[in-house]
Image 1 (cartoon, rainbow, N blue to C red):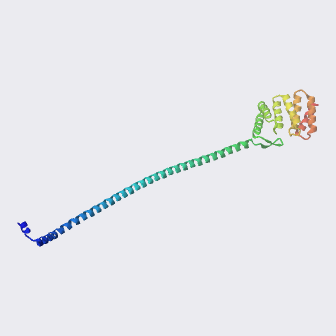
Image 2 (image 1 turned 90 degrees about the vertical axis):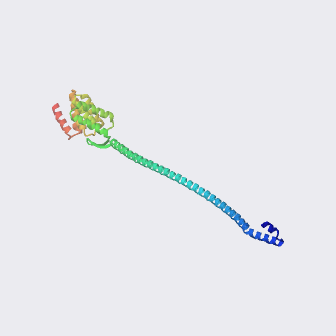
Image 3 (image 1 turned 30 degrees about the vertical axis):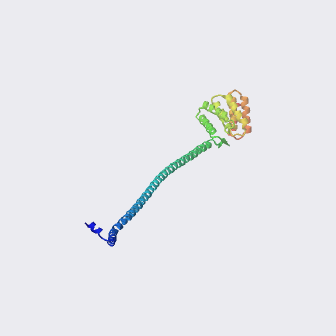
Length: 262
C-alpha cells in the first residue's frame, strides 16, 4: 500500500524523496569508508609493528650472537692466559733448576779445584835442611827418606838397607843422596856387608867431598878395611882423614885408631 502511495507522487515528490533517501543513507556510507581506512591503518601499523618486532628480534639475536662470541673470545683468552701462566711457571721452574745446577757445578768446580790445589801442594817441592845442606825435595821423596831413617833408628838394618837402595833408585838426583849413601853404608856395615858398605862410603866421599858426613865416612871406610883384613889401606885412610879434616871428632877417633895399629 505504501508503494502504491509512492507511485502516486509526482516528480517533485519523487526527487525530494530521493534526496531524503540519499540523505538518510550518507552517514552509513561514510561509516563504511572510515572503517576501511582504519583497517588499512591498523594493518599498516601491524605490519610496522611486526617489521619492528622482527628487526628487534634480529637485533637481539645478533646481539646475543655477538655476546656469545665475546664470551667465547673471553674464555679463549682466559685459557690462553692460563696456558701462558703455566708456561711461565714451567720456565721459572726450569730457570730455578738451571740456577741450582749452575750453583752445584760451581761448587763442584771449586771443590775440585781445592782438591787439585791440595794435591799440587803435596807434590810441590819443599825446602829441606838436612846434614847441613838446604835443598828442595818432593813431599814423597822427603817421606820415603825419613821412613828409611826411622827403620834404621829402630835397628832394623836389613830393611833400612832395602829402603835406602829403593830410595836412591827412584831419586837419583835427590839432595838426600849423600846422606842416603852414608846411612846405607852404615846399615850394610851393621849387617857385615863390608864390601858394599865400603863402596857406598867411597861414593859419598868422591861425589860430595865437601859434605859434613865425609869425615865420618872416611873413618867408616877405615873400619871396613880393617874388617876385610886391609890394615895398610886402613892406615892410609886414617892418615888422610887426620890431614884433610883436622879438629873433627872423626879425626880424633882416627888418631886413636892409628895409635892402636902401631
